[in-house]
Length: 107
Image (cartoon, rainbow, N blue to C red; front, side, top):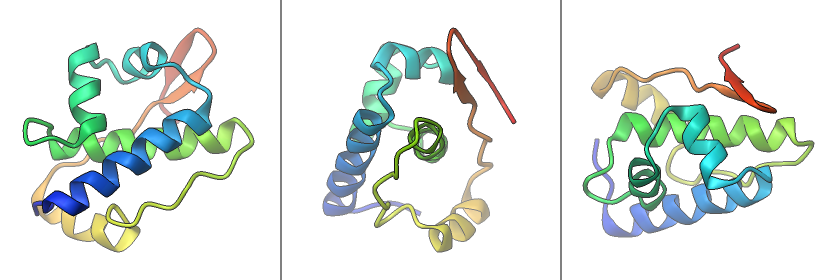
């Protein structure tokens, strides 16, 4: 499963918008996900170096973070639930941690 340039651009914009809506900083997200700053930036950019498993994990993390903050995440147009079924056939997806002030946990 690979994304074309337009799908990468759209997914990147959706990830970045949900990061904004979450109210979390880049540093908090990187810490919760156990990503380096460079890895998080690559994942947010959905560039050719980003790991698809990281992209899905970040998607799920941000979706929940926005909900936990009392907001409504913007919908993902490429990383949909129906796309998840296909992704599971290609990749071993990881559960996303949840942000808790000062720490991260997996529910």
